[in-house]
Length: 213
Image (cartoon, rainbow, N blue to C red; front, side, top):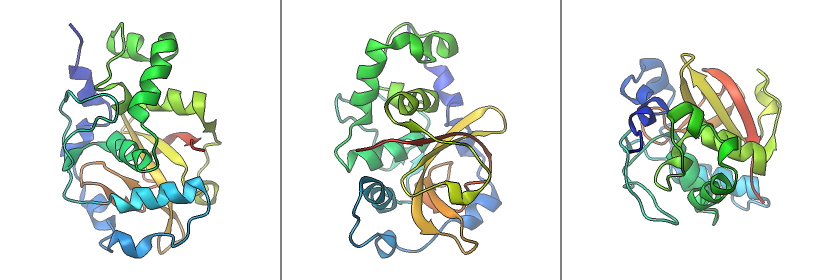
């Protein structure tokens, strides 16, 4: 029997602890007003895709859900941090559910499932929705970039992972939108829906990736 309980510890648990500081940072502007009019590369398109799915009404839902394969998704008004990334890439024709599953199936020992969760086989419903798995996938199939505290080092379309409170993995997409202090803003979901926030340096950065065409 597969162990699903640890899923709650991967990107999900923080959702019930919304901080006032985080809530105050959420951008209320309409997403369509912030899109790049004529994106000329993949990463600009990814930024647009991320902004297009901004929805503070998405309820942070850490439940294990059985979904179809490929192109499966949890209900539209639910999700967690990984679902933001999955949904944005899917708008560009990339199904991370399928891509992650195929790489894990061929290279299971390189992923943390056995050590971290005691799983001995892949699970199409959840593997791509776990931050540690995405970190391995992006490092294998994309490009691993330096981790710094300089916001200028984080470019449009980059993927960033954090460790919140030394135990909760989190992930978001860097957009072309800048905050009032010049920081690149992030589309993510840490409990207040799929939102655009100035949160790059809010937590410990543990991963910095670029993945796309």
